[in-house]
Image 1 (tube, rainbow, N blue to C red):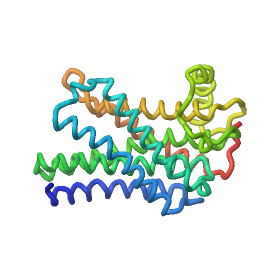
Image 2 (cartoon, helix red, strand yellow):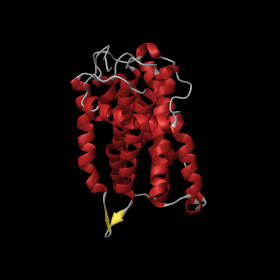
Image 3 (cartoon, rainbow, N blue to C red):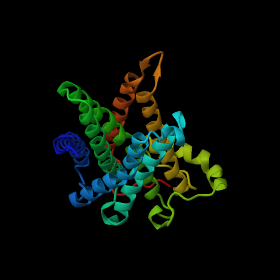
Length: 281
C-alpha cells in the first residue's frame, strides 16, 4: 500500500463527509443529538460499507463481475444492499440510544449520518484506486468535487428519505419497529394487502410532512416502502452515472434531481418535523 496515496485519499474522503455532517447536524438546531451518538452512527455506517467495498474490489481485481450478474440487475442489487446496510446501521445505533430519538426529523439526521460514514469509506476506496492509476492534480480535484458534491450528497438524499419514513413509522401509535426482532420481515400477503395504504401515506402525508388521519398503519410495510424508494433513487443515480446513450453520459441529467432532493431535505427541517410528538395515526 502506498501510504502517501492512502493519506491523500483519506483526507479528501473525510473532509467533505465531515462538512456535510456538520451541515445536517446543525440543521436540527433546536434539539441537537449527542455528538457521541452521532459519531457512533457515522462509524457504524463506515463499518457497514466495508463488506460491499471488499466485494467490489474482489470482483474487479479478478474480473469476476460477468460470472455473477451484469447490467441493470447489478445496479439494483448493489443499490438494495447498500441502502439496507446504511439504514440498518442507523437503526442499530439508535436502538441503543432510544432516549435521544424523540423527533421525526431525528430519523433523517441519523440515516444521513450513517450514509455519510458509508460514503466516506466508499470515497476512500475510490480515491485510493484513482490515485494509484493517475497523477494529475486537476483530474484529482475534478473527481473529488464530483464524489463530494455528487455521490456523497446523493447518498444523504437516498438515506434521508428512508430515514424519514422509518421515523414516521416509529412515531405512529402501533408497535414500535424497535420491538420487532426482524424489522424488515413481512409476509407477501400482508405486504400486498397494505401496499395501497402505505403508498397513500407516503405520498400524501410523509413526503408532505403532514400527520395522517388514517388508521391501520403497518410499520414494517412503511419501512420497506422507504427502503424501496431509496433503492429506486440510488439505482437511478447509478444508471445515470454508469451508462451512456448515443455515446453521451447521462450524469448531467442527475444534477436537477440532486439539487431538488437537497432542497427537499432542507425543507423537512424548516417545515418542522422538529416536533417532540407527531401524531401520525
